[in-house]
Length: 382
Image (cartoon, rainbow, N blue to C red; front, side, top):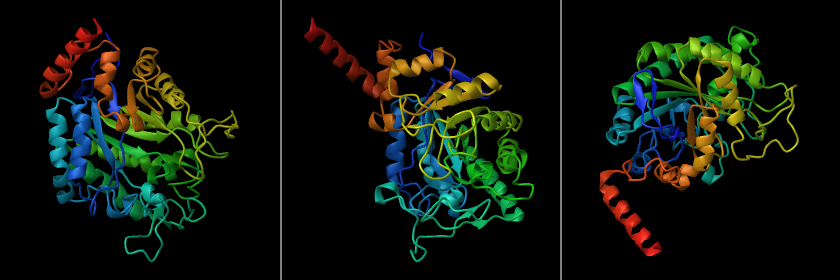
């Protein structure tokens, strides 16, 4: 038996396998609305039989989008636009998931394939950005509006309502985006949060907003919906968020009703640094994205908390993914660029691990053809 292709039950949802499509921004929405491209994009992964197919970061309000072309779910019309994709994913026997997000001070930018830079203030598509403090991401980025307590309360409500819409249209898993320098991460990191009220200061204060969001979403969706929370396990910058902080946060997230911690890293300011010394200082060459470079973060969360963890980051090979799970370093494997390159990666991995020798995982519309293809291949090799 392959662990990668074993089922996993989290609350009221059973995943058919441990392969997860990481949220992948496509920058193809119109006014936050899903387009035919989104259906084609997401349905491909469903046919490829990943256990969970997550949407891209989906904004809970208009200013929460990363770019003007990002998805949103701040109205019933937005929910209706993405629902056909949700229905198709679930119909394939895999699980539809949504990542709810707010880009915070990293919002109002152009898509990466158009430069990924902040939009100029006179661009008609631009909007003012917000954050915990009036601290910009870096040179060339605008100074964000410092959120008031009432505005923070409204943001908690935005996440709650978005979660309700998500469940109502059939999403079975919700992930909250607290990584990569976006709004919740910017509250967590002392680099971007210099407030002196109850939403800043010490670790407890900086965790308050993400925990309020987590509690509100859990209370809204009930006990059966699995909740994931994506973290940047380290800022990788001196004086920034550390792995020790992530362990404390994970334990608090568990108390708030989170089930799985999705372990990424970096993004709060400047170039990411993925490895630090014991004092939090970046190590030389620490920006290299080597195979499985973020797995140690998932491993530590799994070992030191009662939560399950998800590993992500240059996981490309079937046996590599299998070993991460069998060695107890994580519970789930998320793929991003690799599954964009090969949307049928799960089916191919199952063949490589001999977890599906008879092509039973394949959609029946494909199974007969690939089965026959294999027979022809074996005859020609004989």
